Length: 266
Ligand SMILES: [Mg+2]
Image 1 (tube, rainbow, N blue to C red):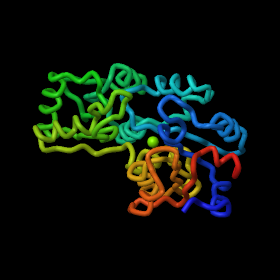
Image 2 (cartoon, helix red, strand yellow; image 1 turned 45 degrees about the horizontal axis):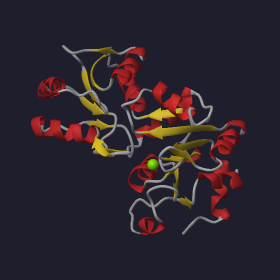
Image 3 (cartoon, rainbow, N blue to C red; image 1 turned 45 degrees about the vertical axis):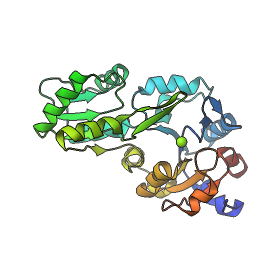
Image 4 (cartoon, protein in one colour; image 1 turned 60 degrees about the vertical axis):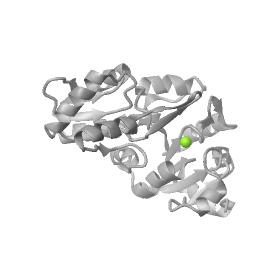
């Protein structure tokens, strides 16, 4: 079931490498072996782009850059894709200016830096993110806007977020709560939705077949890659065990033990 070296040969032709983070690049707080060497190799490679992905929109891109460079990855802000990025791409493309953002202070700053006006009175659209500063007052305001049929989108809809101390409520939980009040659900952009990869490929003007997605979760990382039409590679260094692949509808194109294997191929 693990892909042979011959099967893995197609990775050599890829121009864009998308990587999930937890379970793929690191586990908890520990970077997997040879990840630093892999990143250096990708930086040196001609015509190659690489990106690290997370659905976690409670943090700004700068927060994530600091976190990742804390592992000595030495990457730039352009190497990071968070679920707010396809949302920002969409809002700009559709011409939205005034938004009601359910998000953290650092996310609000990011939206303001991108030129959006955060509006409490007459927003054109409601954006739901992983708002770790959510208050009852904000929920009431959101419900009022939703009842007036304002367009409604979300960065991602994970129900819960794993932490060292167990699960905490995430954006999907907030969406369920608002659904109970308003019977409305948002359009979603983060994993497993294809927008998370396609907006970047559109920006780069590179076709999906020239890209590959590495991740440890079948129902988010692999599903998203398949939705977007990119090659998918499941790593067994995180959540997925080989038996789970046999029983899943979201079968990856390739399976490897971990991203360190790429050093033998590229
Ligand atoms: Mg993962």
